[in-house]
Length: 92
Image (cartoon, rainbow, N blue to C red; front, side):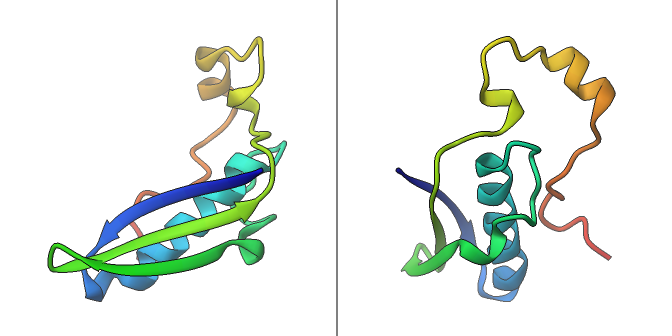
């Protein structure tokens, strides 16, 4: 199975968007929702669109994040876990 995730980016935000795409796919594929455990395995592709760049990541893995499993309770998870993938643009 190949997981895919895409985000549009301006050229100046490209490094942050690429990092976001890697972190998102890593978290989706990791049983502990880790944004770093599989980030190095993500293949990144670029496509020029609408005055910017479409950044697409691909990762050969099954989705395994806790929030994708049966019995997941969002309210309990929010209390137990902080946000693991930083929103784009909120970095120092």
